[in-house]
Structure formats: structure tokens, C-alpha cells
Image (tube, rainbow, N blue to C red; front, side, top):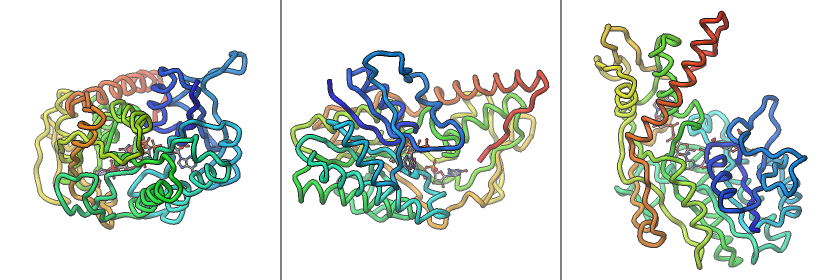
Length: 360
Ligand code: NDP
Ligand code: GDR
């Protein structure tokens, strides 16, 4: 039985990947950091209690900023594959916590690669790094491919640039099977609530049921190449099953603006939006003339990535990969799931209990 170690297993991709690897018969080990509240919502359905014999899903406490925990876990598990998905993954937050972001997102990768070396696992353990389209930042070429020059535009992207190149360097210097998946934005119903897509679907569902008045956003003109996380984790696994380690761009090849995303999600909910005004004064009104979408300049970033569009031609040709979920299907699935949650919150509210209205 193959053993995989997933860092970031409690995150969006970690949950989808753990599920996929368990289906494929792997023994899956996950890194979980200590938090004051539970952080395992996304993987609770995979949990196996100590009473289960031959458990195949096992969590370990550790942290990307703590070498000793990483070395200990890798020594204990002796994984065939490591998927490094852990990161402070929020671009806007990285401007406020640049040092921590560099520590976990850049040095964290070095710690894992060194752990493999220290433990003499270079010839056994294959390594996947969650690289990102944010590396292209101020884009030098459209669409972006594996050889498009990078121009990172945030402390997050700069940290991920280090991560990307240290993986390439360890591959070349030590012959390790290590590769980067340069993934464009991918979303799902379990996407973190502060990323723009989930923020939109969650807020519009709550607005529809009268649980929230308005959705505040930043740059409506930013455009992204959005896909579904379920399709993208399949590629993470495929990249570790090749003869030779290589880096791949993973993208849908289509892009939409944040405003398009709002319109599509609103339409799914039967809300027709009428936009008026320009720049920071732009507002979206519903059919009754209520302003339900407005701009809050707090969400503008010091340096923005205006537009991204990926070309996953290499993945298509070499790995036979194409995304299965369209933009519209993705939005519809996210809206449907957030509407279910909003209906539950509505019920709770009608029974006299207030629900969270946190909308960042
Ligand atoms: P999430 O933010 O949903 O998950 C991040 C995971 O990393 C969580 O499990 C989080 O733990 C964990 N984590 C954060 N900091 C640490 C730390 N110091 N030590 C241990 N664990 C830590 O991200 P996604 O699932 O969306 O993304 C997965 C990876 O892919 C990330 O590296 C991201 O940067 C990258 N990526 C994502 C893309 C996307 O569109 N989703 C596109 C391209 C790259 P906790 O649950 O406790 O917060
Ligand atoms: P991104 O995702 O920065 O691309 O990083 P995010 O959803 O945060 O932003 C996408 C675009 O939307 C604009 N935007 C807003 N963003 C947020 N979060 N909140 C808002 O209110 C808002 N209004 C407009 C942003 O300015 C931006 O242009 C994600 C993360 O998953 C990274 O970890 C990953 O590497 C990249 O995708 C690829």
C-alpha cells in the first residue's frame, strides 16, 4: 500500500486530495496544526477512530514553521509521496503578515525538502509543490504557460516564487522527484469564505433569504481563470505518477471578471442585478431597487494582479488532462451548497437564535 503525506490536509485542496488518494487505496497521513477551535470540518467525514483496525487516514500535529515536527513525521511515516499544500494562502493577508507568509510558504518548503534529504529518502519520496498562477502577477504574456516569465505582485507570490525555484533546484541538484503544479484559481463549495468566489456565493445566498443586507467587494474588474478543485487535485496526483518529474500549468483556459462571477451567482439565485455608478461608487441593485452589492476600498490590494489566463496545453498533451467542470457548473454548485447553509441559518434564526453575519 502506498503512503502519502499531505500538508494542508485541513484546507480545500487537502480535503479533496485526501478523499481521492483514499479512493485509490493509499494510506493517507495529514499534517494538522494546533488551533484554538476545531479546523477539521472539511475532513471530518474521512476520520477513522482508534477502534478501527488498519486505519488508512491518520493526522499528525505539526507546523510548516517547525522543522522538528516535519522531520519527526516524515521519519515515522516514510511516505512514498508528499503533497505540500500547506500555506498562508490568502494574497491580501500576505501584505499584513509578510514575514509569517515567507516563513510558512517559502521556508516551509525548504524544511520539507531538507527533511527528505536528512532522512535519506531522496530516492524513495516523490514531492509535489502547490505552486501558483500568482507567480505571473504583472503578466508578461497571455495566456500564461510553463515558460512565461514570472513577475510576482505580493509577499505571498514572492514567497511562492522561492518555493517554486527551490523545488527546481533540489530536483536538479539532488536528482529528487520533485515538481511544481502551477495551478490557476480553483474553487468549490468548501473554498475558504474570505476568497472572492465563496464570499460572493455565501453572501448572495444570505441576501436572498434576508439574512444579510449587502455584499462589499474590492476590485470588480479583476479577472481570473477559475476551475473546480475536484478536477485540479487529480492533476496533483497524476504529476507524481510520471517517469520524469516536470512542472505543469493547470488551468481552464477561460477567464471571467469578479463582476461576471457576481452576475452568474445572482442569476443562479434568480436575482437580476442592475449595476449603476463607476469606480468606487459602482453599486449593484436588485429588482426592488435595494443596493445589495457595493465597493469597500479596504479590499483593494497595494499591488493587484489584474488578469490571469492559463494555457494547460502541456498537461493536456502529456498527461491527458482536461477539466471536467465548466465555470457555470462551478458557480451553480457553490450557490446550491451555500443556499442550503443559508436555509439552515434562516431556520435557526426563526427559532430565536442569531447567526453569524461575518462577510469578509
Ligand atoms: P487553504 O487556505 O484552503 O488551505 C491551506 C492549508 O494550509 C490549511 O490546511 C491550513 O491549515 C494549512 N496551513 C497554513 N499554514 C500552516 C502552517 N504554518 N503549518 C501547517 N499547516 C498550515 O488553501 P487551498 O486548499 O485553496 O490551497 C492549497 C495550496 O495550493 C496552498 O498552498 C495554496 O497557496 C496553493 N494554491 C491554491 C490555489 C487555489 O486557487 N485554491 C491556486 C494555486 C495555488 P488550517 O486549516 O489550520 O488553516
Ligand atoms: P487570489 O484569490 O488573490 O486570486 O488568490 P481571491 O479570491 O482572494 O481574489 C481574486 C480576485 O478578486 C479580487 N477581489 C476580492 N478578493 C477577495 N478575497 N475579497 C474581496 O472582497 C474581493 N473583491 C475583489 C481580488 O482583488 C483578486 O483580484 C487565490 C488563492 O487561492 C491563492 O492561494 C492562489 O495562489 C491563487 O488564487 C491562484
